[in-house]
Length: 256
Image 1 (cartoon, one colour):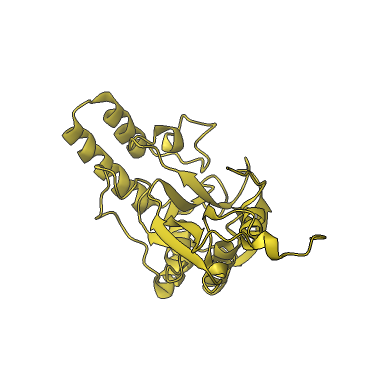
Image 2 (cartoon, rainbow, N blue to C red):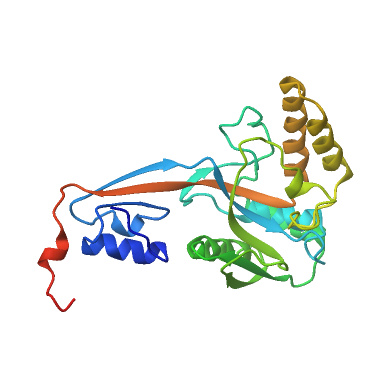
């Protein structure tokens, strides 16, 4: 029997009440000490948590500003496996040598000084379910001198300054729709780079995997260096199951 719920929070409550005996979820931290539950987690490399920068914004048009914010984010308490690329770690085209933005407040402050933006203040928009990560990023950015307001959205907005989302990665490494300058509807960061455009076009024009691999390796290196977004982690997915098949609803009063 399969039951459907309007949100993960409601499904988790149903699990606690015994209405369901197993559940796949994106967050199970508050159930770690719950009795009679088995919690298994694995990395979902088909999804990635990313902060997209609006490259047409007056602040984010500065490469130094984008890089500074990327260095300022702490990756110690991620609910997943850290990554540095928009291409899945399981892909044949993944480049492990792509530039990594390791947590470095000193470097972030140095780049902010170069960006020369007086009293920077930005809005970080995030989608439902990423509240804790958004709060952490807000703290990290304010620790290097950038004032941050948070804004929650249920769907991806058309306009933003910085946007924290979970996006699905395609099985093929082609990301033409997301980064090519001509893709106005899907290039949400409004990124415009002739170098990236050419690499994406050439990778689409060849069917030889080795040639494609070289092109996508270069694509990842140039994209990461330019920092139109910062790629954070592949999220954990949790499978939560009762250790026994007892239905806890039988223990509840009838009026509940």
